[in-house]
Length: 236
Image 1 (cartoon, helix red, strand yellow):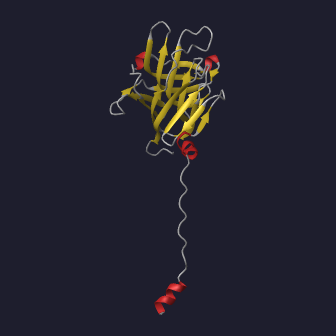
Image 2 (tube, one colour; image 1 turned 60 degrees about the vertical axis):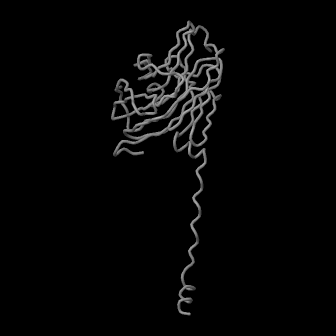
Image 3 (cartoon, one colour; image 1 turned 90 degrees about the vertical axis):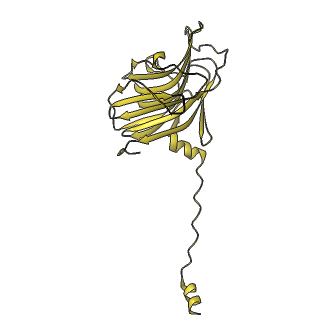
């Protein structure tokens, strides 16, 4: 009887409520931050693991000197030193597509990582594809720096020839005012390092993924395994 009385006097503890499952929209915001669609004609589809970014038809480049800023991208604020990685793969490039801008003598497509300081200063590390419409086609790791509105370092094919049929793992690392890039086509087992870039960086920058093209047909690319890892002692 005494034991029963003690049990009756014990406070009743309600079971803990189940933790709500994270939605794809919440996971997107946590991983990628904000979707940026300057032309208001792009799509961002995230299934919890893979992000597909579809750029509409027409010029969707990011080249500030020409006022071209339509490339869809994501941006997440990061403080301090970090390493960002993603696996990027192109979708189908319509064979009948033509340059969207009159007088352009090439078709360009790319997808990859973006480090964004402001409208005139950013770094791109991408899987790029260029068709010069004369039979010369190149797929390469493009490592590009814009600084203060000037094209300080164009991406170029000698940064590394790629197998265009395979996805590319891309890496971008910030350490103080130095930014390094690297690429891999064997799942990150071996890396090809790119030239170190120096630029003045504040404590916070924004990082994400980007898709570019300059044709009269839509183009989509997919991203998997996106991560931003703070360096030891850096804030998330």
